[in-house]
Length: 125
Image (cartoon, rainbow, N blue to C red; front, side, top):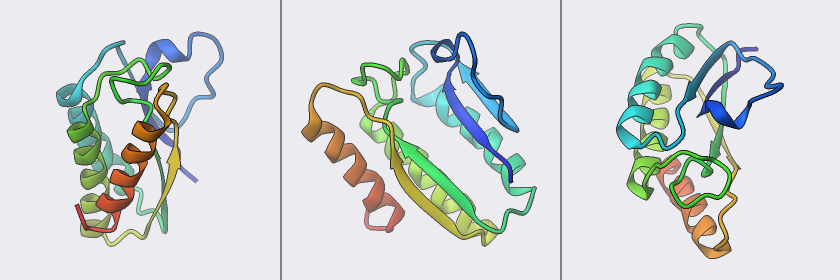
């Protein structure tokens, strides 16, 4: 098993369990830098030839999230999900996407972000 994470480094000041491929980003990181980190991580992850990839598609990197401390836009989250889906499809790695994260004060907005991820994973969006 291999674990990978792209997250706000300041969210884990004390005892984050290290993964195999961890990228800690600065507070306020937006779409461009986040997606660049993902573009660098995906080939490294898929080079390990996983039999299956579980993707915890958290929406806590969104700019409106109270805890994630990153600043991705709604379009940035959709592109993140598209990149994961496309990379796994190209590598012929089965993909399981699960919802995760999402700590904003507007439950309906969080639901819309999760629904967007489902639509992207289904190839509808």
